[in-house]
Length: 188
Image (tube, rainbow, N blue to C red; front, side, top):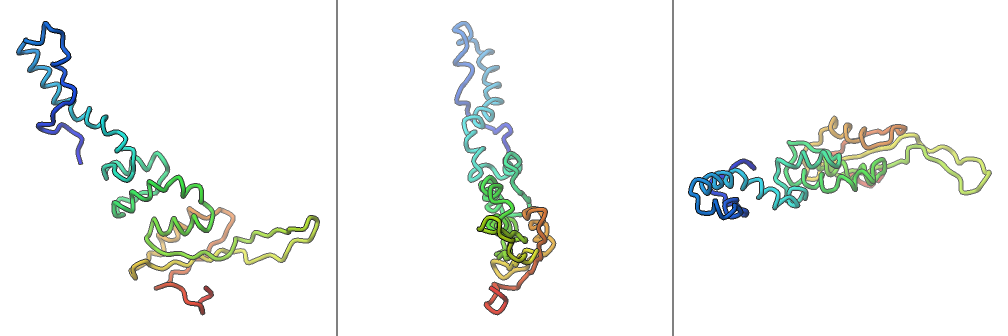
């Protein structure tokens, strides 16, 4: 999509109508300002539609990367446009959930189109009783299982990239790529 000069685009604010009366009947002044109207019409059209440019649901596709840079959204030009729109629209929400199970599951679904299941808590322990000994330490790793939504292929390297970015630094994440949803005998 181009926001350059569009042939025949009328100006909503013709300059010739705003000139002093002295130039209202001057043919040269009217033709000169009509030429400026042609140049300025796309600018006015863009400004009139500015709210649409700032809404990821309807912004032109070539603006998504720019708009996503404002909110730190993950954006990959190889993604379908609807997925890119959703990534930009939900970026703030995903930042709020960063470092949590929910955030990791949503980031994997959004970025790669995979289902995910996260098990383990990264070795966090606590005691509800003041002064008591700590409970025994849990496993120090988080298990992330992913499988494709549509039976397609999952790229383990891309999954690892998302997991590395979304998991807290102190956690160790183990990744399993499954061909389909886990069954009960796989520990679900």
